[in-house]
Amino acid sequence: MTSRILVVDDDTALAEMIGIVLRTEGFDTAFCADGAKAVDAWRTERPDLILLDLMLPGMDGIEICTRVRAESGVPIIMLTARTDTADVVKGLESGADDYIVKPFNPKELVARIRTRLRPGGQQAGESLRIGDLTVDVAAHEVRRGDGPIALTPLEFELLVALASKPQQVFSREMLLEQVWGYHYKADTRLVNVHVQRLRAKIEQDPDNPKIVTTVRGVGYRAGAVV
Image (cartoon, rainbow, N blue to C red; front, side):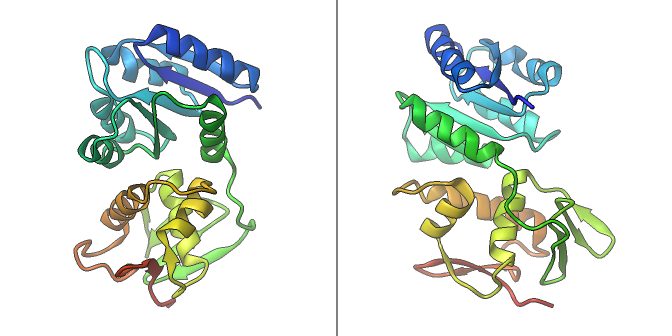
């Protein structure tokens, strides 16, 4: 089944180039150039992934991302001409799964998209217990007791990566490779922000995490299996 990508960018020349690249790679595409119309475009098109520019007329990418994320876990890759830490972190905190800085190599963009659209590599039927959580890998569900916890696909993949090897310390670089598919030096802020987002959903007290803990100077590990 062909994946559909919604491109939200007011740079029409860039959007046209992205469309050519994506169609050549076998994707369907839809476009929106007005930030104020982007959320409606997402609801209408129901894409498998959104490429979202940070700076848009009408409504900026951070607000769009926040609104979409309130309703859906659809993968979102932010397109930005900015490398400023505050802008990048705001984009990730608003719910973006990844970001890519303009100008970018089209092959890199396609690789990022394919990584976010790949199916999980865990075995069907596998169930994990970590802390007081039950993780049903096949159903992509996380529960505390009888209560479900809603995670985005990337947050779920990050939790499974950690929970599959409890007490193993994962460096940020290891997680970037395993979860984001990076095989080269990349921005470790991706990991830090997503761990914060994950903790906000799974920890009883996110400021004192017991399930995903920090190993100072190294990375993260999942807590003891119950």
